[in-house]
Length: 429
Image (cartoon, rainbow, N blue to C red; front, top):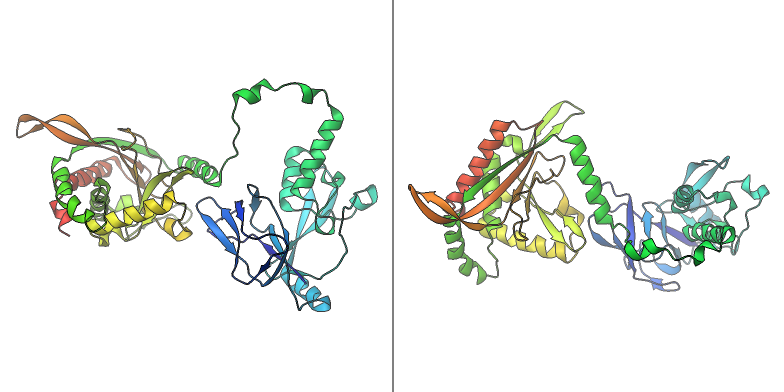
């Protein structure tokens, strides 16, 4: 029998993924649990295992293509099941989804294989099926991606020749049909050089970039952003960090200023609960969280990701430094998993190492606040009524003004700065 394995939802709210690399090829034998393909989703790169043992008979999609959850990934030939037994499995495992083709005047059904769906072995449907006026009156089989693409391109899918299983129209069929139609309409225009192509570099949006765009718009539409900027003198923090830096380095731990900032923030959040909360507008409730999971924005080659340090309030400075090192390495190597992003309550973004001083960070919605860390610099400061040179750390705090009032914003910032100016209490825990 033939078993169709669909792209599963491997994360919360996942809609689509991009094929990074096929780990198998047609005709290859696989065991249940063997890795089939590497997929890039909006947050992670994940390897998808095979749910069945058998022979790979078809691969759906090429490397670099984007497919949706529920679309077919691979077809596996499984020995030992055939005939009526296979048909029963199809009836049990398949779903029927009503599909209406806009402008085509055809209402049909699109068969989507479920997780346990199989197709009995048959030669029916092998080869290309030409769509005619007679067959157009029947249901048109097509992949969801092909349907969406045809709609976007203005292509009548009823006029497209299907080359997939049982004559199903695929993404490539739509592209080939559109290309051949364009060439037929005009061959002269293809000989004209496109000057704009030489001036514009076109690059498809990555899953991470699409997610960043979606989340930024979501945050701006749903939260009332308010920002506060301030400076804190951290010469004492610098001294303490240098004192412990050598010791921790001998243990393989890199001690950065960020570890102290995370600790200071968790202490401050316990005193100012509004900044560790979430507004539930649907149920007219406020959710004040008594756990402190601090998200850290990490700049990677593919885009910004925000993994989480869980229960940061229970960790020492040394343990926080280890966590920062671990999640930063995983982020840059593309090894983060879905659990690394869950349940954040407050976010810190550090752009100072690149050269920024102040910014207006965008809240990681539905969180209530985000703290931006600027670049440390030597500046004139007044100590004991005397002019001196000190290390100054700029801070930018953005809050959801629906949740946090202006006075509480200032009090929280003052609390954080108080801990950073006197770091001994943080390092002793």
